[in-house]
Length: 397
Image 1: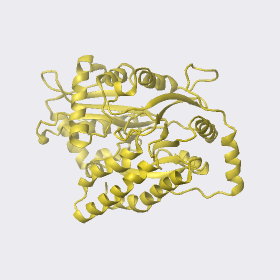
Image 2 (image 1 turned 30 degrees about the vertical axis):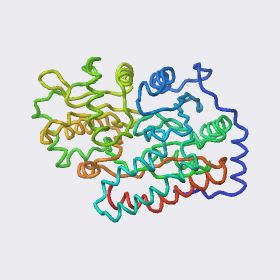
Image 3 (image 1 turned 90 degrees about the horizontal axis):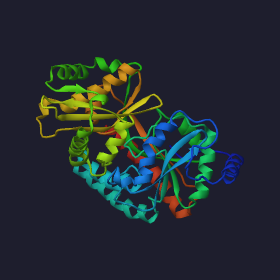
Image 4 (image 1 turned 180 degrees about the vertical axis):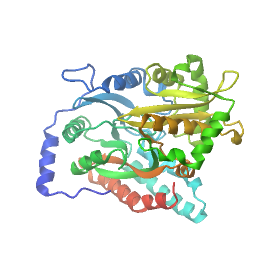
C-alpha cells in the first residue's frame, strides 16, 4: 500500500472539493433528513463516553470524543494531541512503539529482536517529534477492531474536507482496515489521497461457508465444551452482579497476561454495553454461579468481532477455557452465516482452526500537514509496508 498514482488534474479536482467542504461540527441533535439504521446504536454507545468522559468507561483512554455526520451516518470521532500512555486504540505511538516493543517476545531469534528493538528505538523520538499522536480517528469505537458500514466516496470526501477545516493541524485516520472487509473503502481512500500504514496481521473465519467447523481442533473443542461442568450462559442470563467479575476476567487475560495497552474496560462500560445490547455478552458459569469465562461480541454490517474475552487464568490450562470460549464465537458465526473477524494474537491457535490471515492498515490523510510531519508518516508507511509486512507474514504473527 503506497501513495495513490493520480494525474495533476485529478488531484487538483479532489483538493478543490476538500477545500469547498463545510467545517465538520459535532452532532448534538438528530438533525434533518433520513436516519441511518445504525445511528441509534452509535448514539447509545458513544454519548455516555462523551458525557462522562472516556476514562470513566475505558481507564487507559484519554481523548476528546465527538459524533460527526457522514452522509446519513453518525460516526464516533476521537481527537488527540499527545497522550503517549494511551491504549493503542487512539495512539499510533502506542501501536508502533510501545506495543511493538512488547511484541518482541514473540520472536525466538535474539539477533532479530535486537535489530527490531534498535529500529523501534530509532523511531520513537522521530514519531514524537512529528507529533504522531496529534490526530483525529474517524469511526473509532475504542475497541481492538473497528467495524465499518458502507461509506460512499462522496461522504468520505465531504467528511475529510470538514475535518480538515475543523482540525487543520491533525492527521486524519481510519483504523482497522483490511482487504477482506473494506476493499471498496480502501480503494476510495486511495483515490482521495490517503496513505496506508500497516499495523498487524488479523484472522478471519467465514461463517457464510463454515468449513472451518470441521477442522479437528474445532471438533475437539466442541466436545470439550459439551463435556464441561461449566454451563453456557447467554446475554439475557448476564446480570449486573456479574459486571465486576467480567472486568476481572478480562483484565486477567488481556491486561495482566497480554498487554497494559489493550483497552481497560470499567464496570460502567460493561453495564452500558450490556443494557443496550451493544456487546452481546455470554460466558461459562460454574456450579456455584460464578463466571469462569466471558466473551462479548460486537457486530456491524454482517461482521462479528470479539473485543471482550476473559477467563480465570488461575485454573488449569487443561480445562480449556479459552478453547471453549473461542468455540462459542466460531459456532455463533457459523449459525448466523456471518464473517468473524477474530483480530490478532494467538496466531497458531487461529490458523490450525481454519483462520485466514490478512494485513490490517490504518489509512492516514496527511497532505495538509507540514513537510516534516508528512515525511515521517510516509517513511513509517514505506518501512512497515517494505519490512514490517514481510516479517508479519514470514513469522505468522
